[in-house]
Each structure stands twice: as C-alpha cells, then as structure tokens.
Image 1 (cartoon, rainbow, N blue to C red):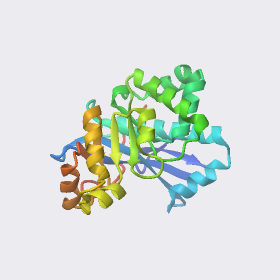
Image 2 (cartoon, rainbow, N blue to C red):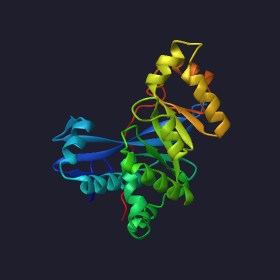
Image 3 (cartoon, rainbow, N blue to C red):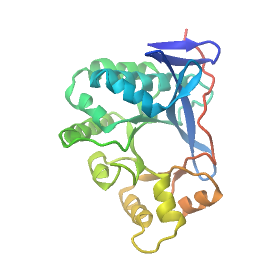
Length: 258
C-alpha cells in the first residue's frame, strides 16, 4: 500500500487515483526548540492539490471498515516518513490524528495485538514517542465506551493522547473526562475569542489554565500566527506552541528502506 516516490524522496499512498503524502509541522517550546511534530496529509490529483475534507467525504462512500483501514495505513506512512527523515530523534514526539470513532475497533477487535501493534512497532518508533490526537468530530453515544476503553488500553502500553482543537466542535470538557488526555491543544478560535479580547469574566482560557494545571495536563496552543499570539498563549499557561509564525507544514526527505 505504501509506495516509494524517488523524485520526492518519501513514502506515499495512491488511493482511488489520489496521491497522498505526509507533511510535518513542529510543536515548539517557548525557546522555539522542537518538542514534537504533528503529522498531516496532503492530497493531490494529477499534481493539483485536493481539499482534504472532500477526499474523506469520497472515502466514506466505501464504508467504515475501508475508511478505518486507510486511516490506519495513513499513520503507518507518517511513522515511516518520520522515522527515516532528518527530523527524527528518540526524544521527539509524533502527533497522529484519529477520529474518536476509530477506537471502537481497538476496544472490541482482538487483532490489535496480533496485527496493528506489530505493524506500528515495525516502523521502529518507540510507543512513548507517539501522541494520538483525538480530533473534534462527533462521537455517537454508542461509541463513547469504546473511546474510553481504547484510549485506556493504548495508554497502558505507553502511547499518549491529546485532544485536538479544544474549544471547537465536540472537543471540550466532556471528552476530556472520557479520554483523560496528556495534552490539550487549544484552538485558534478559543485563543482569539478569550485571549486577544482579554475578557475578565467567564474567560474560558483562564478556567482551562487552572484545570489543566491541577490535573497535570500539558497545554499546546495552536494557530500561533504572530508574536502577539505567542505572548497571549504564554500568559494563559501554554507549555508548547504550534502555528505558521513558528513553522509551516512541510515534507522532509526520507531515506528509502531496503
């Protein structure tokens, strides 16, 4: 399923005629040294960029299991490109995006230990380096138990968790209670609404700062686009920072596996 692109020096996937490849955006300390990278995908058709949401909408038509399989191997591609690139070292975290419904397979299927984990370990990235980001998508009530059990199991073998885009969609305190994440990624929308406007009453950033401090959760501010954003995030307890002001998502040359 993974193909080597000689011209671009990276592993890619071809799905329904679409070319899919990895890009990585750094997550930084306040000193701007790199703490980790978020793996993202870029999709092209005949050299033209394709909207990611449009692509995933097409993929939905092939059924949930096909979508699950694609997303799993998408993250294997990210792991391989990360592990064999010049941005890799054993202390650097890799953040991988997954939907909350993804975990019902981990909670109820016995092939996690027999198939999926061996494929992950084959990429030679230590499990302690992997941070799974639960995106802000809706999770049906029927799948909440699976989300809880799946995340609890993966945490027990060393994988960490983050809630993506906290303050938007379904990423809020109720999901925090289910996942019990190691990291919270504060959305740019929340940064703008409660940070740049400097509200003094009902300021959800101040509330979040207090709660995460009490629970020992590290906070990553997304959407840092200028120095004012950086200063505001620091004022509200940021541990790490991510955004175009610090780094653009990009592809890094990868060494081909023999």
